[in-house]
Structures are given as structure tokens and as C-alpha cells.
Image (cartoon, rainbow, N blue to C red; front, side, top):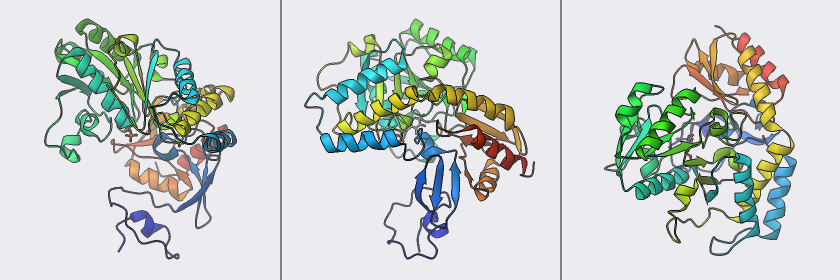
Length: 394
Ligand SMILES: Cc1ncc(COP(=O)(O)O)c(C=O)c1O
């Protein structure tokens, strides 16, 4: 029998391929065969409004013509060369990302996943400072590799498979100003924080607290890392949450919406960090490959040309104004990293919305439904969500 709940719930009348996939994912009961715009098409003919975007990845929705054309163009001209050769498309992608961010971060290391970007950021901080302790924030999620998992809240109990963390780790209570000076001392190499926590349930840590963290890091020589894998690349309605809050860290990691479906990630760094780099300090085979770079460039072009940041800000505000109905008590987070705080268990609301052909996400908070909508969403889609929520039991 299949251990894959999607296969069970989906292709009931079709003999699909045998299931050889590792049984490690809980899956939505959806058998998706295609997608277009902001809608998913299922094998049984449903058209589902996607407000979750594949864990915050599908920022441009599906089949965006300029995204597709950029991929095809690059695939036809040069689909791969490693970092052992200079490529114009790679230089352009880095320049485009730095210009998009408009922050005093001048250097980019291109890699493949959010966890890999965080792993490299932490490695650099430990090496530059010569210290062996990292501070993270309660509720954080930074990825599943050795270092990223070590700074992920609750990982040690739930899934961290390594016998020990590669450095000392302490967790800071969220938004607790008094705790900052107590925990972030001169022995701390890096402070890693998601300015808007994603997996935790769209928890906005706020400009004031982030500024206090920044000040403490500056005073103690600790490198401040913003993990913007989920909240970056326009998701808050600003290039990065660092722009939204007016706080510039020493490093920003980003992924997910960066390629809008093409796997890629980036670590942006300040001059202080970049100065410490020499040949061979960091590396990856696939990171910064020409396809990834063409897609980063295309994604930024589309976000800017189609004024998608303004769209996220406008519709993010509409979501907050209109969707506190039915089981929803309030909306937290920023832009399209939004958490609907529900009176009833979020998993029930999520299931009821899916039965009405609206896909949302849940989170680590049992009372938060997560909205990670594509930036190309339209007003009518928010109103569709509002009407569906209003029709649910409170
Ligand atoms: C804030 C944050 N950091 C890091 C990661 C890990 O990214 P990846 O799965 O690409 O390694 C995630 C993934 O959900 C994330 O939300």
C-alpha cells in the first residue's frame, strides 16, 4: 500500500507509477496535473485558487509568459557551465539582485537552497569572528542541514539527526528587548533571525526589536544575519524585510521567490564580510548556474516592470481589512506572508477552504492559516477568500 497520502487521495481511478519516494512528507489531498496564473488544475477537473504558492515559491504564479520565455531562451543558448568560468548572465544576476535590494550589501554568493545559504552565512560569521556561539530566535526555521537545523527552533527534539550541533546555540525569546543584552554578548559570532518568521506562522518581529538587535550586534561585534528565504524577494511588498524595517544586517540569505520556481538561493553580504573572502572559501557546483541566473534576472525584471511590490502592498492591506470574518480573529505578518489567526484549529479551516477550492497553508502555530500568495494575485481573489471564510462556521 502507498505511504504517500497524495497518491491515496488523488489518483484513485488511475493506475499510477509505483511509489518509490521516501515517505517523509505530509501532503495535501490534491492530485495536481497543471497550473496557470494563480490556479491549479486537478486530475478530477477542479480549479483551485493557490494562495500558498508551493511554500512561498511561486511568486509569479504559473506559466508567466516572460518567466517561461527567459527559461527557454537560456536553455537554448547555454544551459550549464560551472563557477570555474566567468559568465555574463551570472554577473548580471548578481548586479540585478544588489540593485533590487538597494541596501549597503555589495557582494553575492549564489547557491541552491535556503539551508545552503544559511549554512554559508553561519560559517562565514564563525570564521570571521573566531567565536563559537550562534543566537537564533524562538520559533525560527532556517533549514534542515547541520548548521541551519542547529539554529531551527525545536529541530533537536523533532528531526535533527546529527549527534551534536556544530557550534553552541542559544535561542532568544521573540520581541523581548530585555533578553537581547543578556543573550547576545561578545562571545556570539552570529545572530540569525527571520524578520518575519514564516513557518512559525507569519510572525512579524517588528522594526523596533530588530533595530535593538542590530544595535546590540554592532556593540558586541556579532554579525547579524537576516534569513529572508521566505520573507524576502518582495513578499512583504518591499524588496526585503530589511527595507521594510529600515534595518540593514551584515548578511541576507534568500531563496524561494528568487527564482519563482527555478531552484536557486543567494547570500548577500556587506563589505566587512566580503573582505574576509578568498578563493576556495565557499563553493557549489550548481549555484550560480546560467539557468538559475537567467531566472533571477527575469523574476526581478517582472517584479519591477509589473509593479508587483505595489500590488502586494495594496492587496496585503485589502486582505487585512476584509478577511477578518468567519473563523478569522485577525491577520498577522507582512504583505503576502500573512497569518490568519483562527478561532478554531487552523487545520480544520485549511481543509474547509480546500473543499471550496482555495489552497492555503498551515504553520507551526495550530491557530494560524498561512497565506503565501503569488504577487500577481488580483483583488477578486482576495474577495473570493473573504466570501469563502465568511461562509465557514466561526
Ligand atoms: C525562513 C526559511 N529559511 C530557510 C528555509 C530552508 O530553505 P530550503 O528548504 O530551500 O533549504 C526555509 C524553508 O522553508 C525558510 O522558510
